[in-house]
Length: 276
Image 1 (cartoon, rainbow, N blue to C red):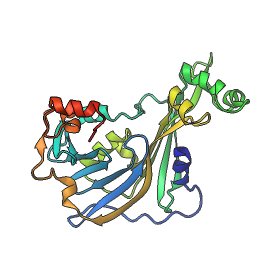
Image 2 (image 1 turned 180 degrees about the horizontal axis):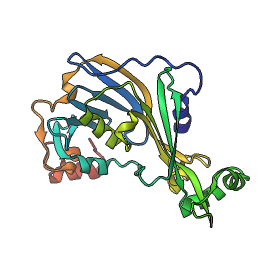
Image 3 (image 1 turned 90 degrees about the vertical axis):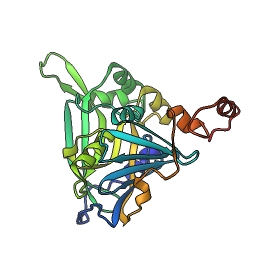
């Protein structure tokens, strides 16, 4: 289902909509709505000096006054907890892998579902031993034959074949203008280089287990799927820790306590199934 959703956002060919520059101001913010395996359903708001990601678990806030820190905010128990950017990135790997070791990439122009011009970068690289086994066992009866014909290339030494498979895909916009610091952090979250533009779709190769769970032919996993991007009236509350919220002792207390400090009765409620 997710696979179909992602491809439904791309319309190759045809005339692309002229891309007006989109930039937050003192009156407007950018609102990017998305879904996918990384956050689930999310609303990502970008102001001039901060951005936030709102999901079913609460709010995550980044501010340029503390560019190496991220704040988790839980509106259910009115607590917040600050972590380093590196810890946040580790918490939200979500099936992502670094693109740095991928051997080749292909770039082409595409359109989003609303006609907006975008750039699609597909990363390829050698298949792992497990992926080679998967290609021979998944899909139709002739999948191994297709794999042999279309995904094998001669290695640089010419002494053996190196199997090239699609490992990741990112879709970026060039008309979004954020501060350099903000764009760098957003691209870090989306696992791509800032020079590519503003990423709005991210797909990564599914693990062996994920391929079995999704479908026999779903080799790629939708991590972040674009739904819409537009300028909306500025909501300053999206970029601030709400007044009256308490600092949690740790991340466990942030999500499972009533007051920001994990007590024995909170654990009792958790094991009885009363998760907030």
